[in-house]
Image (cartoon, rainbow, N blue to C red):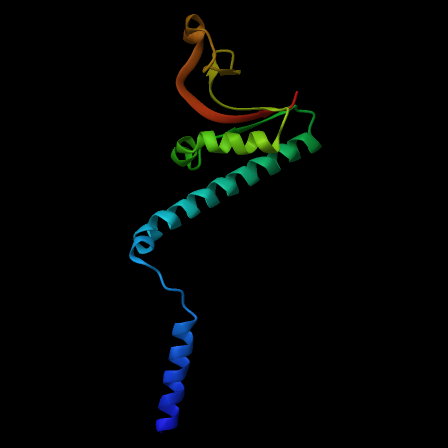
Length: 138
């Protein structure tokens, strides 16, 4: 029976020895590090998704741009839009990659109201503008 207890203590000691010591400062930073890891993971997932959709649009249609409407995770995307655009610009050099605000005009067409002249805004239903990421290879 004593031999069994010694084996248990030996296994415990061996498993404890394989753990890494963590100091107080590191312990205080673990939550921040984990949150940042999750944020970067979400950005990578979105960039991968946009990359895939844009490449498929180029392969299977005659369109020369891909437009992604921000409706899922809009707050997260907008909070990280600069980093997302930088990643996409690296993946699509020589292409235009931008974040824009679009609304439907009275003629039912979509207009980029982020660049439209203020005198033309009454012609556009800007009550319901939507945010988009546009990748243009024209």
